[in-house]
Image (cartoon, rainbow, N blue to C red; front, side, top):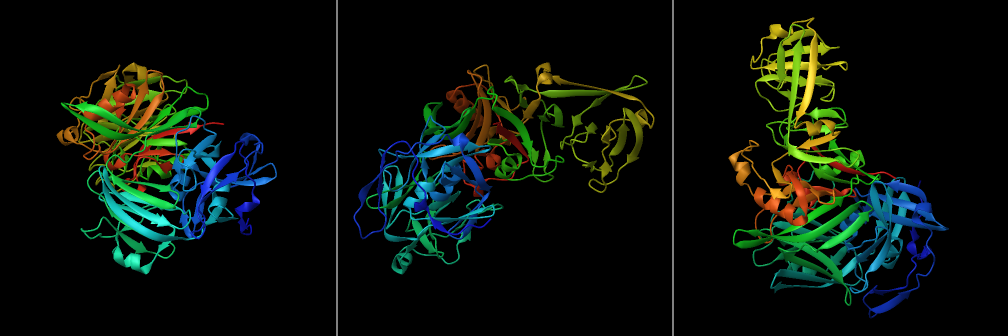
Length: 625
């Protein structure tokens, strides 16, 4: 379906309050308050009719993977963009709210003391903001073309640029002649703000425009990634003209980031470079999910340390909310992908990265149990979290004990189930692993079991040299390092399988995810990376971290932490203190470093996507109508 271009002034404003929105559209006229009478009655959002939805937005000629929707409300057509997408794409500042159907924002023309409330509607798995009037106020036009929403905004003129030192860091201010949109991308030591605006040739020359900038790393998705220039040491930033975009390239000191916002009278885009740039907020995103940003201070010996923290509080006891381990590959356990991609594939409203995996062969290294099916068994007695759809949650160190008993009474212990962890012994592989199994080490003995009986066995040679089909009505056994005489499992041998978790409390839980180490148990910090057999390097590492916890109210916490204010990442002990400060009674460390990621509404909310690595698995949060 292709519709003609039309100005947004065709749409009427449909809020129930009266707002004074302060605009400065064009430089010749002085800024004045424009009174918008927003007195029409709103029809309930749930009663409106959806016309079209899509996953791509073309903004001033560039395509972004951001969900949008179009719906009919009364006799008016409305346009909504996913809220986090609107924040990242347009530069809207989302403010705290306890009403999931009304999202206050700050953007250019809005008075800082009287933010603009925008209607929000939840269509699983996204929360959409009704930006119909906002586009109109900025002079934008739109077109719906099949599953793509095209937005065009007038290009602003950048009239003045200045920079200065502040007590907390540095500030760059760009004066523009009209409200405009921008995007941000950050990597270690580099940041860039992409403004839909033009700077004069003189200003481009004064601020060291670069024609061949150095690209940011890890841009395997179209996620607002952009190149970065080499900025002269004498200047905080440089400008790059790319046609409809002016890119402001910024050198970032260690553990510093960009905080970008807009002001009016005159219209300005403000870029703050600071270590404590996180703006605290609490947004009730949808009933059962609260998004919080806050600065958490902990005692680190005699010194207090502050960490910016992004986290979600999930009421999994709500009949609308459920959690489930999610993996990259629907048909097996091999594969990695950006967490955003995996969350979108599963249609999860939110997600956090999960357990450990091998980056080389892209196989899991720890417990993953989904809907009572073991996708991967626990290893090394490490920490895990289990839950069911009735709201029961349990954290502890976990082991899986499986034993095969032959008809002659021989008991054969199974070391691992559907695991990429390689060790001498017998491992078992089921259809959850995939359609076939390829030996992970040399000289494995492959044994095919169907209907609880050995069908045949074969000596494999080199690792990865041949694949063996996994029967749907059975499983494969593999003997590694000659750990068992293959004659005990000769063709025709009848087998009985027993499987139990230790502790047994995990047996009753339909979902399990393992990582480690455990951070908190019964309100006490119990970090013991040695007993969970983590390396010395891992034990001492300070890095980006993610964790899952449980509050005293029984809600689940999904938490992401990167660098402390002005310094390095968190140690395991510091992460435990952070979780304790946030109210966790029990908590588990998840995979961290570049794997750390927290997704909400189809976008990462804790880091720039260009810095996030691909991951094997995560925990998805689902919202049912």
